[in-house]
Image (tube, rainbow, N blue to C red; front, side, top):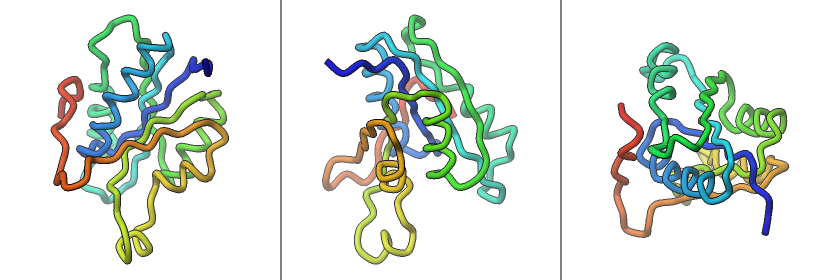
Length: 143
């Protein structure tokens, strides 16, 4: 079995990220791993740095045995996530994706895709089932 001691859960606080949260927590629990919740703050997105930090600190697994750290970064999301993963010795990144296709994907790009391509560790990309329009917020992530 692959050894997973450190799981990274990057979040932008969207329903897509919240869906990935369930997978990140389940994998951390199954492997006895620590969980790092990371948000890459971008000024001008409607959240202040303090609000982003407050939301990030609400990421708390129901299982108290899962050790969680909260990391607020600033910069290009994909670059910061992969840099942090390398610096922190992360074994697995669990990231949600919007599942954009076609022209929208070409114009907007995909943070998840860039993380997958640029990361030195394994990456689990979680997307909504086909036909779904949104995911329910994670019960343990309070906004």
